Length: 453
Image 1 (cartoon, rainbow, N blue to C red):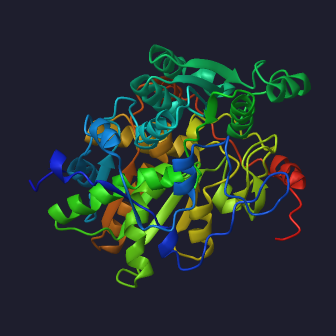
Image 2 (cartoon, one colour):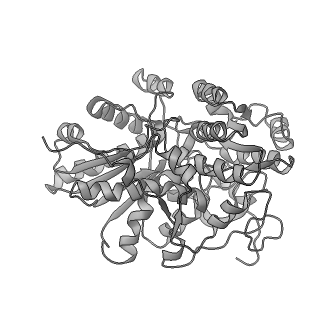
């Protein structure tokens, strides 16, 4: 059998992050201040100065600090696998590869940014970080980062995931974080929402608002975000930079790259180092497919316009595909994909026609996850199960057409703490949620007025 995994030596780990901003065919729209609605460069107290600089940096490559590299090397470089068993089960001529990020201490790609953010905050003398988390991957990663750099950590965890995934909460608390279900009684935003809807299941937008309010109300605290922002996508590009070296080892180049998107950081971290080949015209036919849940189809059905990044309107206003910042998605198991908006960089590339988007229902998604588990052995998180669904479908299209294509999957993490979701699927209790069109229509009536747009 052909080689099944491709491993880089520690010395070959990339030591720079790739910044796509200077290479974009058209400039990214500015971020707007939530109050003045004028272009902003996110002044403190939102982020430390180094993070703020990275958010808008004109530099193509940014050096990874030595202390961050040292921690990265405790799990990086991660392995690129060839999915021979899956290929055989599908009887497809397609070559399927997956870059597996589930071997970090937190079990996902999230520490790639969490470690960096904790480092930069520590360097600036910050004592405490406040953040949100959907399914718990980001919260656990930041809890890990804060533990390693001696910072306090407060996590507002979307209530539906807080209840569905108790082991994520226990992970965070083991690393020393204080975790509360969002909406919570700890902030004015949370109390207001609970007074209006005591049974609110929460959303990432609400949790972001609570974390922002927390950071703004404590002098020793900064806010930390796990996706969407330019600097988070930047930190995740170590994934794609490694994969480029590994695909060279495999003597292969992807025809199709597929990954899941909620806020967009994990998949952007994989595809941004590749999309520059589309910019240059070297690989114009390479397909980049973003996959999202049908219950929260931000790219496929959202409006491309200006909207707040959070429910309460404290975060910067971004030009992005949005379902409306007050929208609360149905409680699908893929909690990390339940966000009303999408990373501006991804939305910009989608508008330019450089990437594609698909939406999938969760029953079909878990069917793909079980197929992957029974062939490749990895129990996948609900979020990356979305891209497994599309990758399998694309491989079957290759079978029908009798053509061999190379498919690269961005596999963002394991599902060991998501077994209740697999139990729902295996027992037949899992159900699909239709696109909540009326709720989205109502949420879009609350978009901010931006005269300059």
